[in-house]
Image (tube, rainbow, N blue to C red; front, side):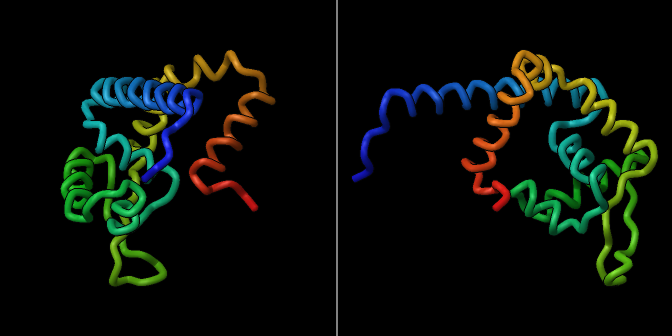
Length: 143
């Protein structure tokens, strides 16, 4: 049997849930302002950092590669993404943003006020601590 969570833990989990819900709500709204679905916007944002093979995109977004293929197809038809051979393995195709795709991803990031506005109320020290705590929770903290 799992031990019952203490009141503080329940409160923190509820707050995290509220933050996540608000972020998703604003992200979907921001995506729609660019005529994108939330999933298309997430793929475009991921690709704006670096070109990736479909399988890696699926792993990062925790979904099926076939879903990513359809999303990339739609982004490609809009001129936001292109497929190109991987220089390291020409059998593999990378999805990469076009110049228009990079501009759209940048505009999308710039329109996400929900995350920036509350964080701006925190000091640099508080934001650094929050980042480090979140990294520890996710198991991605640098060693």
